[in-house]
Amino acid sequence: MKPLSPSEIPKMRAAGRLAARTLEHAGKFVRAGITTDEINKIVHDFTLSHGAVPAPLGYHGFPKSVCTSVNDCICHGVPDATVLKDGDIINVDVTCILDGYYGDTSATYFVGEVSDLAKDITDCAQKAMWKGIEEVRPFAATGDIGFAIEKFVNRRGYYVVREIGGHGIGKVFHDDPFVPSHGKKGRGPKLQPWCCITVEPMINQTSAEFEEIDIPNSSIKYYLTGDRTLSAQFEHTVLITDTGYEIMTLP
Image (cartoon, rainbow, N blue to C red; front, side, top):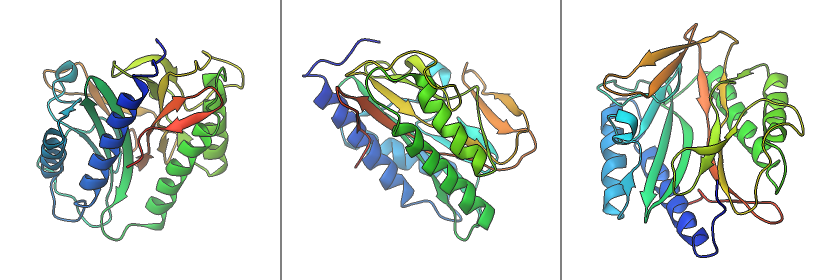
């Protein structure tokens, strides 16, 4: 991917900030009794009202403006009439396009009172994301990020999703390099200064293989844990600077 120019970086920062504010806004409505479709409308309306476009809507046929992945859904959950209930966890994954640049971020939220297991796997997913981000620096390898994430997750007794991960992002939604949640130090593409990537580990309760589900009229699929146990995820868009990194998706 092509490095961002000095004039592009503020635009990318603005897109990231709006995505973060959109996610924060949507998170305030997560509660028992709301439907994932209602969360979709909240995200859609907030995005448009701030002069941006929800990137998921129409992307390879994806039918909604946000991904809502509940409990055993790993990612790309499609908002629908599903009613959230006390004890659920839900990942809300927001991407907006502002002035031609993409901001991408997600968080996992609790619905009411959740189990200790739900709290623990969510905590693990959030901390795993930060472990990965801490490895971001110019010319580090994507394997450095993945190694740090998987080492932390395995020590916590959980499992990373290997086949799905982060990606380059900028004026394109999904670009090279692929940013895995596993790897070996020094292996994989080198991180180029002034490019953006997402770091987004998806953490599963068990090592069961995931199940891939078709979305009608779309080439995008959503994924469920094979044994229907829990999955949690967090995501930030990160700029690789000349000395380290900058989180672009902070409110």
